[in-house]
Amino acid sequence: MNSSANDILTIALICVFAIMMILLVIFCILYFQTKTKEKKSSNIQKESENNKKTTKTTKSYTTDSIFDFMEFDKIEDNMIITKNGTKYVMVVECQGVNYDLMSEVEKNAVEEGFIQFLNTLRHPIQIYTQTRTINLESSIQTYKTKVNEIEAELEKQKMKYQQMVNSDAYTEEQLHAAFFELTKATNLYEYGKDIIYSTEKMSLNRNVLNQKYYVAIPYYPEELGENNFDKKEITNLAFSELYTRAQSIIRTLSVCGVNGKVLNSDALADLLYVAYNRDDAEIYGVEKAIQAGYDELYSTAPDVIDKKIKALNEKIEKEAFEKANRVVLETKSEKEKALEQKEESIDSLIDQMAKMIIEQNKHIVGKDIAEGAIEKIETDTAKRRGRPKKQTNIEGGTKENV
Image (tube, rainbow, N blue to C red; front, side, top):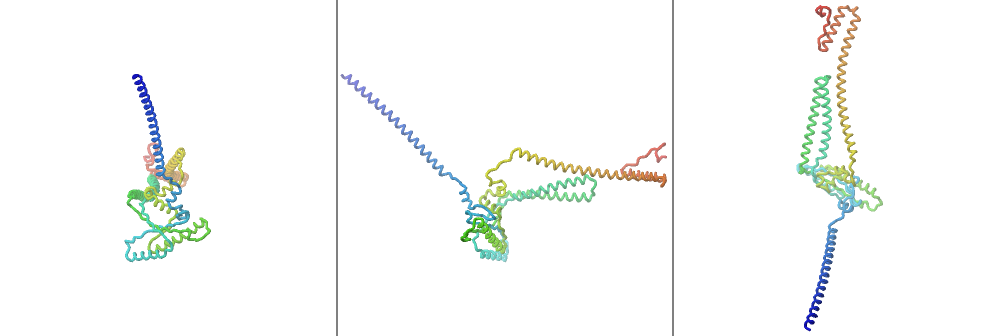
């Protein structure tokens, strides 16, 4: 009886233990499933937060935002048009005066002139000062172009002088004058090279600054009042009014010794380019930017074959030019030699003609006189050619021996 009761109790304990193990396994499975779900949800939340952060940090720059930043629409008819045609600006560039170096009388005259300028103003203006690093690149390019022209002319003079030296057709005075001109051209070429070297060295100094002074004159179409003008007519009226105001300012500033001029469209582009690109303008000017096609949407390089054809054409042109110069010089020297030979042949022809005339008239002048004249002509011919006259052999010895 006791053994059966123990068996039943053992079986019950085993069943309870098995049930507990099954429940433990189920609990573990459910626990791990909830953990994985939490991890996935947290990762999704992190990704969404990161996406939100990235969307916040990135900005989209559109054409409208760029135009809003630039604060002007376009440059047209020597005017800066801003705010979709609601404001027109014309700029007058002024040349400064050395006020500190003036005497008291001159200073008083400048001050009175400036007071007069302020009293005559009937419209708002803005005085703008722009400090620039002196860019000598355009001057250097101009100097190099001039020096290349001088070098080409110098080579021509060298070739001409060498040709004159090789020829005997020029006197000492002509050779001396040609050498003097060649020396002047050489000195001018060396001077030009020195100027280029000094200017390039000066351009390396970025501390050399230049200040420019401007007077900006605005005009608002609201000043016309109620009107039915279109944009083109408003632009023309704005130009007329601004030009009148600019000329009035230039005249009144001239009283105090300040000269001024109205900036054209290219100068206005340069002014705005330097204002918005102060650092880059020292290296890459607006002229280079325009030549590089910065306003074009895309650029294409020329075909390789086209490049080769262009290079061959340049080579052919250069070699043809050199050959033409060489052949012309050779032809000139050959002509000079032919001229000398012609001169010598003319003398010989004259001598032969003279001897023939004497032979024909031997019976008139006499045999002895005719032979003496012929002998004299032959002697002169031999002297002119730089060699002694040939001795003609007669029987028994020479003529002189007989």
